Image 1 (cartoon, rainbow, N blue to C red):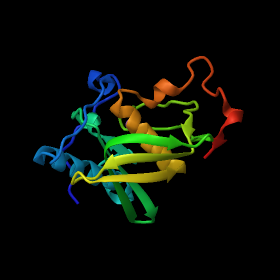
Image 2: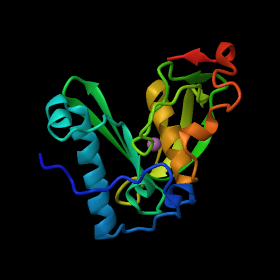
Image 3: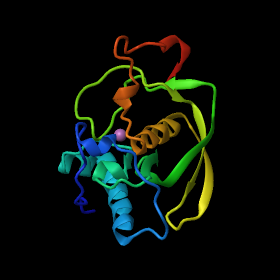
Image 4: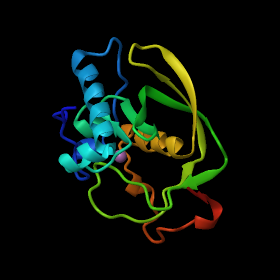
Length: 183
Ligand code: NI
């Protein structure tokens, strides 16, 4: 596998604060290539050999805005079993419903655009139902839960110019700990 030539924007880049626009179909060749590159990059970041070879931080998800394209597109690569990956390509997503229950990542959420240690609770819904479009423009509905649901909410935030650090209470980073389930 060859490491894609993509540049991931860093925290203070103003593009990350902008609201991405709806994608239109058919996607352009540039958009299709970017989706492919993001998936390859995330996969390589999770495979130990390529992670070490290219000095990558492991990541689950990337939004188009993180590589400089302000379109409502994100991808998630989930390692479902060792060495086996499931890709989600999510275009123009909308959260249709969500659980009452909230969860948070105990070790803290991370982002390939935030290269520093952060701690604190990022409250997320335990389950969400999302409508979106696939790469060919076909609509679909998907219910996701637990860590995948967190990844979806993290990426949907990116499309709206929000970073996970914005959701951590400034005064008390562990606020609400007892009202949510840690995963
Ligand atoms: Ni992120």
